[in-house]
Amino acid sequence: MISQIFPRHQVTSLVFLPILFLAFVRCNHPEPVKIGISKATPNYINWLKRADSSVVFINLFNLSVDSAVKTLNGCSGLLLSGGEDVYPAWYGKEFDTSRCTEMNRRRDSLEMALIGKALEKKMPVFGVCRGEQILNVYLGGKLLIDLPTDYKGDIHHQCGDYLKCFHSVKVVPNTLLHRISGVDSSVVTTNHHQAVDILSPLLTSNANSNNQLVEGIEWLNPEGKSFLIGVQWHPERMDEKNPLSGALAKEFIIQAKQFSRKINNPE
Image (cartoon, rainbow, N blue to C red; front, side, top):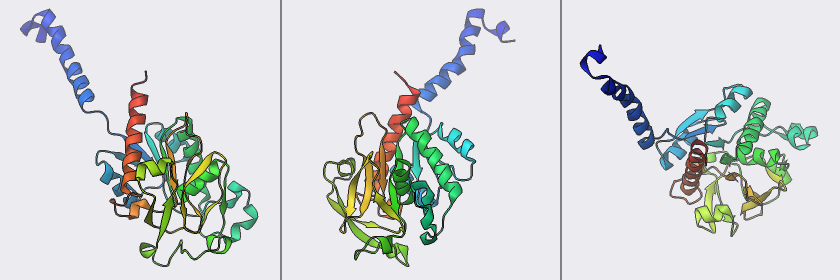
């Protein structure tokens, strides 16, 4: 018996030593930040891991909507990844579904619920390609159904080989994107069939292509709101040295860490 070896007052101290040690470890080695991804692929995970290898990623795609929302509660950021066309009924164009390509109505419902929960919690949100589009739709905007026919211009936003599809974008001065990237323009990798048509009244464009197509979005009035950025290009496929790729990943992780500290250490 431990009481037979040590005096009673020393036994009490020994009992609390493991607890104190665990508290010390937790203070000096905090829990890793978790990012929920609406549909994870290696490209998205590697893009963010290059910014911070300690971050943990959770693929929300195969969960039920309720389970995904519950799981997001334990995360510190939401990444909305690229993919299929958004079902047009979400933005009042159900009559025009025949011009869509592949759609996934379950994914639409999943991401709508995730966006709602993330914004409710004021959690950092980053949207890529489809992710940018569905953010705009959730907040009351509309999309161009078929970009090649609905928006004229000499820029190819979608190519047979998506790895060889590039064009330049202009960053809008005095926007959050401009502050993060530090550039007025850059070349990006692109591959999308749809795009922003009518911008949500809550959002503003932070980047445009040379033919004035909306290429990026953020809050029009960010005061009191969560970090939110959407980009039409694919930063996860670009060189991390490109200011419209690596810098965005780093800022998103920084915002997620700040959110994590805030919810874990409320004032």
